[in-house]
Image (cartoon, rainbow, N blue to C red; front, side, top):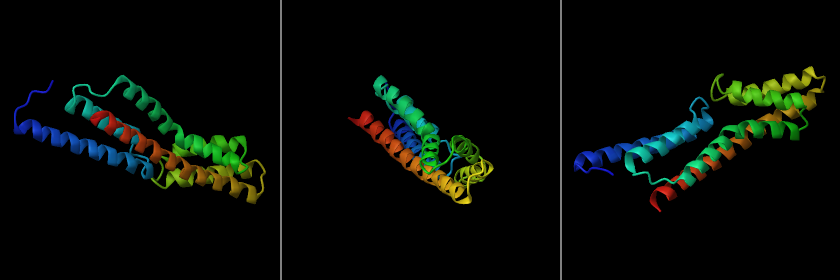
Amino acid sequence: MKVRCGGLVVALDIIAWIIIAVAFIASFAGIVYPVIPSPLMLWIGFLVFQFMLSDGDLSVFFWVAMVILTVILIISDIIANSYFVKKFGGSKWGERIAAIGVIVGSFIIPPFGIIVVPFVAVFVTELVQRRTLKEAIYSSIGSLLGFLGGSIAKIVIQLIMIIWFFIAAFV
C-alpha cells in the first residue's frame, strides 16, 4: 500500500515511469546494439512498476509468461541463424558455427559483429569442408537472413511483452 505524501509521490511516480520508458526503448536499441541486454531492459521496466508503482498488481501468470517469452527472446537469434544456414544448404558444422558466431559477434565490434562474424565464420567453415565458393557464399547469406529473421522475431516478442505489460498493468 502506498503512502501518499503529496508532490513527492507524484514526482517519484513520474521518475518511475521515465525509467520504465527508457528501459523499454533501450530494449529495442539492444536489437541493433547487442551489448545492451534487451531482456534485462524489459525486466527492469517490469520490476520498477511492480515495486515502485503497484501493490503487486502483476499476476503470477504474467510473470510466468514473461519468463517463457524471455527465454524465447534470448534464443531467437541462435535458432533463426541455424535455421537459415541449414535452409541455404549449410552443413551441420555451418549451423553450429553460425550459432557460436552470433554469440561471439555480439561482443566484437557491436552492432556489426553480430552480422559479420557469423557470415565470415560460416563462409570459412564451409570452405574448410571443401564446399564450393558458391555453396559457401550461399550458406553465409543464410546467416545474414538468420540475423534479420532473429531481429524481426525479437521485435515482435518484445512488442508482445510490452503490450502485455500495459494490459496487465492497466486493465
